[in-house]
Image 1 (cartoon, rainbow, N blue to C red):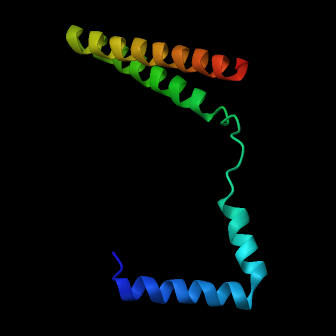
Image 2 (cartoon, helix red, strand yellow):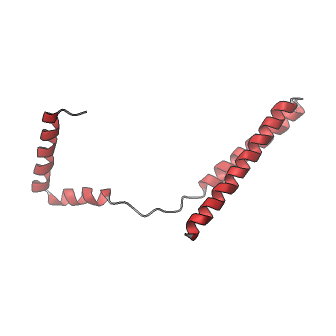
Image 3 (cartoon, rainbow, N blue to C red):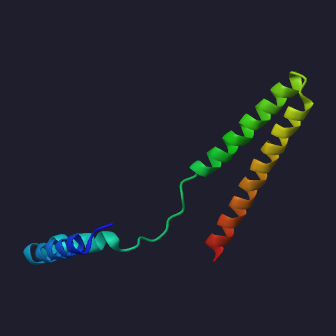
Amino acid sequence: MLSDHERETLREIQRQLVVDDPDLERSFRALEKPTPTRTPPPQGRWAYTAGIAVAAVLAVVLLLAGSLGGALAFAVIAGSVSLARHLDHAARQRKRGD
């Protein structure tokens, strides 16, 4: 945290910058304005798909290795990620509809 003296020095520097170069201040103010939200790129879908694929492959490998419990655990993980993808997609659809 800044001390009172440092804060006052900073304010004085800011005031001087505004006086010396008003365009600089305007450019900083423009950066502070919130931008409209955009739909995120479809990379999230790939993350879900990759998670499902990895969990499914591990479930099969563990099943072939004779670990029924491990295979079941990864099958549950794959199902959970699939459900999360579905819920995320439904939430995005509702958001676009509003």
